[in-house]
Image (tube, rainbow, N blue to C red; front, side):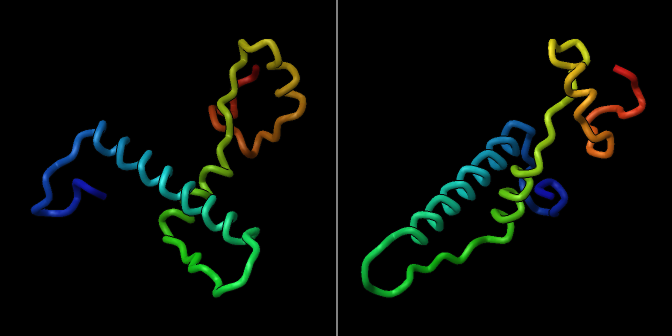
Length: 96
């Protein structure tokens, strides 16, 4: 998205990774602030807890992370028995 706009200085992968990490950090901070405001007691008007749609998407992606399968791990047999192959993060055709 960054490098697709004309007239914008091209960014390298390190800059994009830093930008992504900063977006995640800001999203987590605003989510924590919203949770704090919910449990805050006392009088006064309700604090503004509006959110950014990009931050909401990043937070949703964090909840959907699927760990990679490692067939050489000591608990690979357990994961093979309990895993659902529809949510496979690697090649689902291979046998462990």
